[in-house]
Amino acid sequence: MTLYQVVFYLLAGVVLAATVLAITRRVVVHAVVYLVISFLALAPMFYLLGAPLLALLEVILYAGAIMVLFLFIVMMLPRETRAPGLGVLARQCWPAVLLTGISLTAMAVVLLSLPLAQTPVTAALASPRHFGRVLFEKYWLGVEVASFLLFVALVGAYYLGKSPEPVAEEPGESS
Amino acid sequence: MGWLAGIILLLIKLGVVLVVLLTAAAYLVYVERKLLSRLQIRLGPNRAGPFGLLQPLADALKLLTKEDLVPEGADRFIFLYAPGVVAASALLIFAVIPFGRGWMFMGHEIPMVVSDLNVGLLYVFAFSSLGVYGVALGGWASNSKYSLMGGIRGVAQMISYELSLGLSLVPVVMLARSFSLVDIVAAQAHYPFIVLQPVAFILFFISAGAEIKRIPFDIPEAENELVAGFHTEYSGMRFGLFFLGEYVTMVVLGSLVAVFFLGGWRGPLLPPLVWFSIKVLAVVLVLIWIRGTLPRLRYDQLMHLGWKVLIPLGLINIVVTGGVLLWWGS
Image (cartoon, rainbow over all chains, first blue to last red; front, side):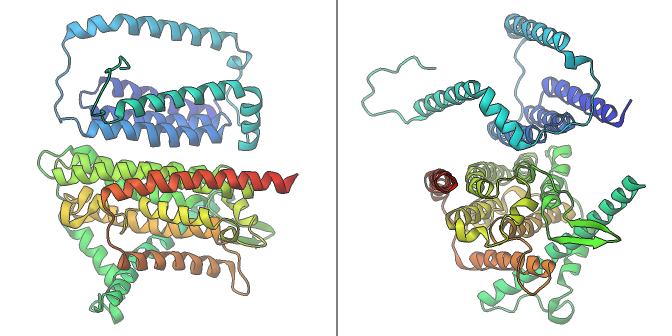
């Protein structure tokens, strides 16, 4: 095993352990902290695979922005939250199982069909300039669609968060 | 042999940077107390040593020997480690800051930066955004309403101003055409970026002031409402770590202003290290001066300033800079 592989598997272990802990903790803030640790361990893996830009974006966006917002909400919840009964969990589990199955199958297909899957981890580097070129020249449509989606979500959040008018016509069904 | 020498060199650099940074932070407390007392017509610390110069040492001894309390009902693990997050994330930012011209030593050039990442600027953002966790988790884990309020205010303030902080630096990256802090200093060989980007400089300075939670942005620790905010329940060296984090961040902030807008270590006559120190000190003194001058903002004024003034200005600045660069380039 090369040094890169050792570090890679170490980080992968941390990611897996932290993620498992994140979904099993009862205290919600602990779950958030473990998820942050999982993201922080994922970032150096991107770096090892030659994408320092993605590694830092992972930290800035996921660990530094999205999870902070999670924490912000969770901090305001009461300390002891009662876990939902088993009945609720059993009813909710089937869609989750279905979606997990679909994404696992898709991941397996991708991993097995890519030629890269067989090559060992080696040192690589993509500069931010190169990365930007590829992203905005080859995948510009995806970027635009994603940004449009975010914009729609922003408008929706603004609509929901707006204080109600004195003369409301229709409550609307945008929930 | 090559990699061994590299590791030894790296360790030496890390050691020197750490010692200098921690000493600077400790003496910054002294400078701040002295300067504030001048501004308020008091004497300030003057008992420990000549001119009170040993005061930082006395403070450190006191903090290290005090009892380390964990309040009842606190979330022990998170409570104990939250201050470390604040101090560590502040110290780690300094890794990418170039503080001098490369030295020639035995035929090799030794760069005066711990690590020249090609995504250095994003690295700065990554660690400054992680500092929020120390404030939020420390406030939450204390199991005290003042701490919790302070933590929540801190998070809201820091995520709001992170946006304008990021936007203010986009024009700098556009001008330097690189994320590397070494390249950004190199791009200011003829004139510092403050000449080309005065708006970005002001935006960065205000947003950074809000990020380090100092007056006029010290709402998370507003003494007369929240006791001390998120670190109310802390004692001993854990309180010291929050304090250390704050002052290290001040030094780091001064260095960042120097690197992004004041030309880094460049300057006539004096050696680069001296120029760098002068610029950092100048920024820090202005921060202390502001603290001695301005009152605290109200919460709605803070949010108004961040979201409705700084962020739109930052966006306009990016568009104008992009337009000018395109026009000049063609």
